Image 1 (cartoon, each protein chain N blue to C red):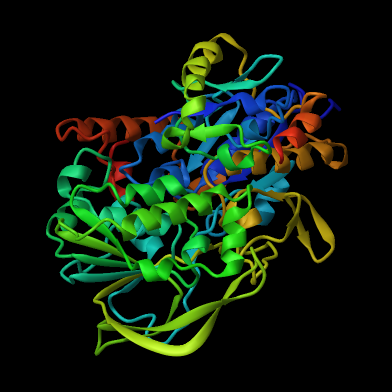
Image 2: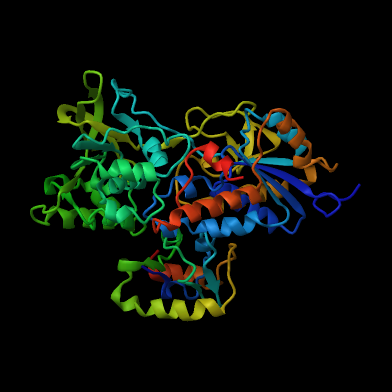
Length: 101
Length: 456
């Protein structure tokens, strides 16, 4: 079982997810967030709080987003942990509207 | 006088309750940039609340936050006072005088009642009792559940109901290498339970399970999920709910139920039946539970606001054992106001209030603040909010130094309370892990307070 952040997070970074993570497994670059699968406990607390539904778990990861499993695993450990809410990126509201949320 | 929150005059905070909310409040205070000393009070000798005694034994990954709590527990400015009951060994007023602030994170320790005749018959229990029993909580380890009944009813359709259902339907093989309490594994090995009925007052679209927990009930070694496809017909309001993009869990749950409805004949030795639109109106039996009377419901109201209304149509079902899992409730604590309707301490953003008045220095977080909703991580955001309120109030606190636990140890000693330190807990922890090794279990919990103290 794996929980991953996918492309909907790009240019958004609302960071609501990090506030409910019980183990601090989110990492961030300037563009989006990633989950460290070695630390994540697959509790799914983050899944429903994402305003753009960027986070998927296990069997629910759509086929066309499966490559994010590897991207999360590769990038997360090399980026700083993010545990506290930050302002969304300036492009966030525009992206959210474009996604239909 | 030194500024409050500095090395010479640390902010002294008492936290009452050692579950997730208590540890996340501690974490937030330690990250605040101020010098903070925390004394955490816990009525049991062992910490971690529902992560230790609520999370099901077959979900070990969900217990991993304990590693984070353990790191916090070993921080120099953190002090644990286990085996101390606030409200009995110490009063709220004593804490208020001894600390700059007190945060209550004591959870929701009791269950909501069905409020129907026969609720207290032998054979009718709360999910809390059963969960506490299989998890080795000292309050519940001596409960004697009669598992000789073949038919069990679980009232409620949330994740606790799913946990109870799974533990009742799993084989000993599926459980024996978990940290389930030994007495529970022995009793479950002799269980004759075959038919488990999981009963909800509303429909499949309103069931509160998270989808993973629900799907798990369809993947058990020796138990088939059973559902009558006719019960999966949805009213237009429920279809609106499922089509809402912000409600993906309910849509997935209905998909899962549908897949079970078309599975074909059951082949396994146990069955878990899902029933919707039914509320218990009475429990019947001569001395002990024999039958449950259910009333058929219909849904009434707008999408996302539909409630169950009885139709008057009653049906009876044989059942020898019943667990109600319809929500937890907090308990009042002497010296604090209590919202009896919600079962929480009345509060504004975590500041405890009495009517419209904020009670200075008194805060709450977790289930005793917002009611029993959400999962472990939900409490992190909740405790961060409470700590933000506390830090905003800092300027109003008495700036004089407070003594903290040093002033309380003599009082506790005079009351013959054996205070358990964090180092003591680590010894108990190591002994439990050692006891588990021979059985290939992550730990064998001590389930009596006397056994825990005997390690020290």
